[in-house]
Image 1 (tube, rainbow, N blue to C red):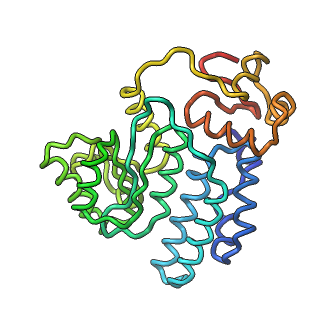
Image 2: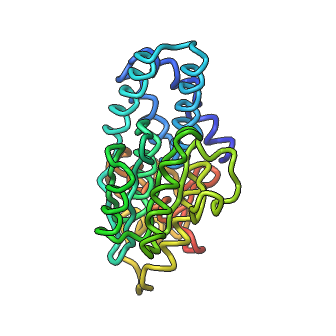
Length: 283
């Protein structure tokens, strides 16, 4: 991330206080401002939201906050993120993913963030939350036949449930690619030790793995349909700031920001030195 982004965006400690205080409006305003200032959704989740979640978990483990405090912070963040979630647009022929918590893992937010990012990246997604045990997850995966199954594990003690799901799928000859992610796999480097195909220690690892997996399964297309933002960048034949895009496109900054976030997840635009440009040397 560039220094310009860091200076204009928020940091995890900025968000932690409002979350613990149950301040939904303040929390939402901070997140919205970061996106409007040019921070991508994946950067926001990785550098601000995820560290907040881990710090809240640490505070609870050390009895520095109570269970109601933890629940209030989680509920506040859930509401704030829901208000920012753009409509997902899956590409034609896009691969599918099932995302949820490992059995007996009832901390939902990490899986919810992964769902947001995969949906933004163009995957067709099913979010199953934290309501399924191993046999139900196995049956659901077999029914839906996704290309990718993502299981969130927030602490090592919950890994057994994820292992049960993967082992059950393999025993039935199911070849669904399984990624296990979250703080519960921080101590692991070899996914084969728990029967998974990959580990996601952070959201960037998940998106990188999914990007490679999706690229190998989505049929090659001709010239993609270009959005208004992409067309503006192509016609300008130059990198543009967010305000320049607003003028050229004649759309609100908030709307353009959401489209830029989606396009960045799809690797069709990138942000550098305060300006947006098409990838692949188009601008």
